[in-house]
Image (cartoon, rainbow, N blue to C red; front, side, top):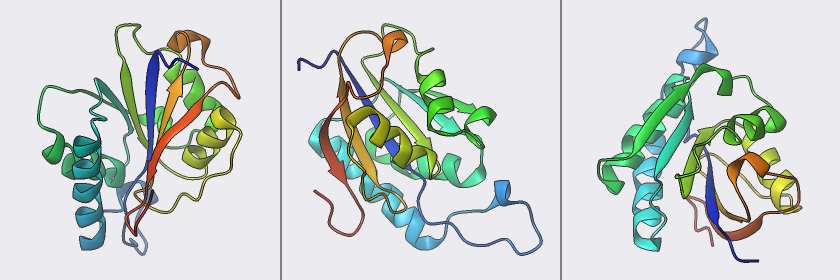
Length: 163
């Protein structure tokens, strides 16, 4: 398959608990901040710099992007989308389908089970997807035509020695 687009799927990094507080406001733990920066360094060294980012609006996903982006440099279009917080994998796919055609590589920063489910839907393989995990998927055609089973897993990474 000759990939025309790349979708980078990332699960947010390790977050702490917020007893009595809303899940939406949970913040990254120190490990999550380190893992986010390491993920950004891996993406940069592997040449997987996104053209645009769609991110859940939850605090932990926005913080994951903050630390990751410090390793990638500026100039990347970013959108925090509240719909991605409670989205399932098909909802995420619908949002990805709305991506501008001129975006070659899109990064999605979100939550499980949607993130792992999206990788499984697109590639047909169930990934191991701990916090801060990344899957880079090659896709044929346009974003609007995103379909199950048409993706190819190009690379993956986890903070504890991923591939």
